[in-house]
Image (cartoon, rainbow, N blue to C red):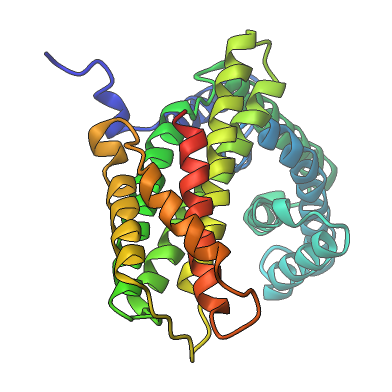
Length: 329
């Protein structure tokens, strides 16, 4: 059976909305007998991942566009539309003004508007200034409405996929790192690179979570939507907590050296293997006897003697075990 969501692999919602915003912006400009190119530029850059981002950045892009248009008119009046000074000064001062006024998000469209409108100004300075202002407003409003009303962003599936991927990689890395420790490999570039990749993935999860939260604040949604988001947010928080403890057994002092007893090695091996198989088995197979063995070991160690690193490692392994025991309770 053909996957009903096949089109999502071919074209994204944001791409569709950009096309629709461009179409409607062009139609509105043509109905008003205005040149659509400047409105289209504004509409394209206004489509953001969320409606909130479109509205928020739109507030800054409109005044930035006004500044660009103003400089274009002024310097065309002074130097004419055939002078390189008109283009250079319009672009330069538009960038400087946007930077000073904290309008950086609108700098690109403002500069493009400024230099692109110079050849068509001729002597109709006032008309061109206000027509550019109107077309920019049309582009902003049209893009904002399209982003708000058509295909509202939903990042739940992406979050689910990324969370699963993150957890799979974390559990595998924990198992791999435990094997390294048992083999006496206390410094590992391989584990360092893996945890950095997982951290980058978790940052993307945080970004998508923020996008979805912003989107929900701009739409009247059922309580189920917030429950779903809160559940995913809590899951991401637990993953960050796991990452903290996982990093604590990866980043060790250069002179670290630990000797584990055969009983401790077997306990660590059983726990790490059990954790690595969670997603494959669909359940967390507890190793309570192994956890008990490690608890007994850490109680017998002095916190600030030569066994400090060993105490630290066993403690972190037990914390990871406890977090997952609570997660899959």
